Image (cartoon, rainbow, N blue to C red; front, side):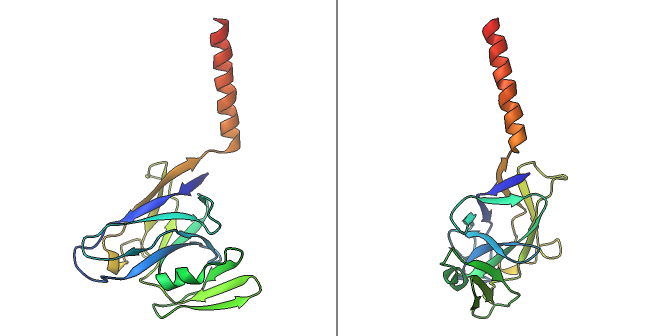
Length: 184
């Protein structure tokens, strides 16, 4: 199935590590590092401040995640978000550190390097042992490695998108119940 990624909230660290860092999130397809979505807002860290990020596809439509794929959720500097203004382009995020971001354009593809605010987070949908409407996110080693924002979230909640066949069968069943009740 698919899940719509609307938003998630990070609980802020109790100390001032990484204070006053403004960042947003990119959502990458785990197989080719293409950017499929982003946070529509940025947040600034401070001690004890919880940050909520809202998400969409680059074109502004709802961000749909396929349960069978792996995604990467990367915290990137505000300047990376500023490089991604032309939504007609395809964006790739190359491996890079915390240095100022650079962009290389070839045709309609823009490759961005650098600008990470901290180690990235790998995410994947995990149906086993998790609520049916959640995406379980772990750090790079399955633990919290995102030191500037400790502790990290463990779930991204969203709205499940039913398959068309499920919707059709549901409507057919509802129609049958209504006809049966009408006869009675």
